[in-house]
Every structure is written in C-alpha cells, then in structure tokens.
Image 1 (spheres, rainbow, N blue to C red):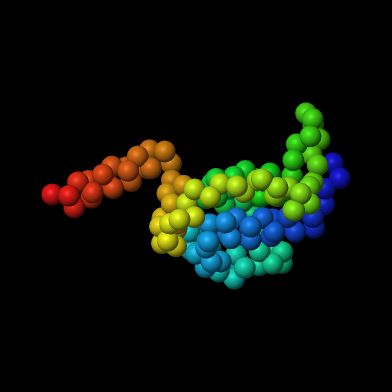
Image 2: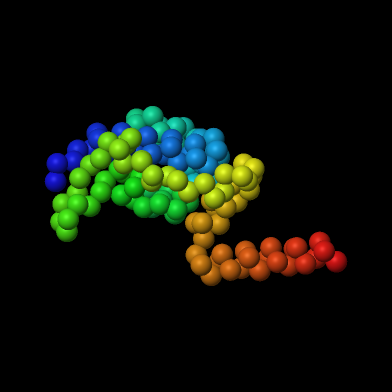
Length: 137
C-alpha cells in the first residue's frame, strides 16, 4: 500500500470542506453537531491535524458517507487500496443534495439525528408526530 499520512490528511481536509459546503454549514455548525471545539474542527479542514478514528466515524455518520470516502481511499481489487486525488475522488461522490433546501438549524437537527441509534431515531419521530398532532388540534 503506497499511501502516506500527508496525502490522507490533505484528502480529509478537502473532503470535510466539500461536505460542509454541500450542506451549506459553517465550521461552527459542524463542530457543534460533532461536539468538538471549533478550533479543532478548523484545524482538520486546514490539514493542521486529523480527527481521531472514532471522530471520523461520527463525521461519516453525520454526512452519510464512509471513512474511505472521507479519506479519499478506494479499494481496488480485493486487497489493495489506491489513494485518489481529492478532485478525482469527489467526481460524483457528493451528489446528494437532499437537505440543502433546509435552513441551517434544520440541517443541524438532521445531522444530530443521524448520530442516534435507530431506536432513538424512532423515538424522535414519535415526538415529532405528537407535536404535529398537538399543533393541528
């Protein structure tokens, strides 16, 4: 495997900016959703540092993508990985624009819900149904 940390760090920084841009969020919005300091998140986007593996997992959940997508790594064949340049890797990768018509607060709520377990997501759904039912009466 011919992948080095510097390349991955650069890809992570680029892909975090891309994802955040697609969702129309600020660095502060994303750092709040992830529960991290805004300066830490800013450092990830500027390739000064990288998120931990567990934080990369949380980021992937929030943006509905994979760790490989965030890192810009692609499996080729059955046992080798190839590091793609950010621009090459992003072709068509971030075409999902399903929540871009929401305002910033709504986007943050969606991102937070994505971090929940399926059971907790159902509970949130039930609460929303009750609130809507109450407001219609």
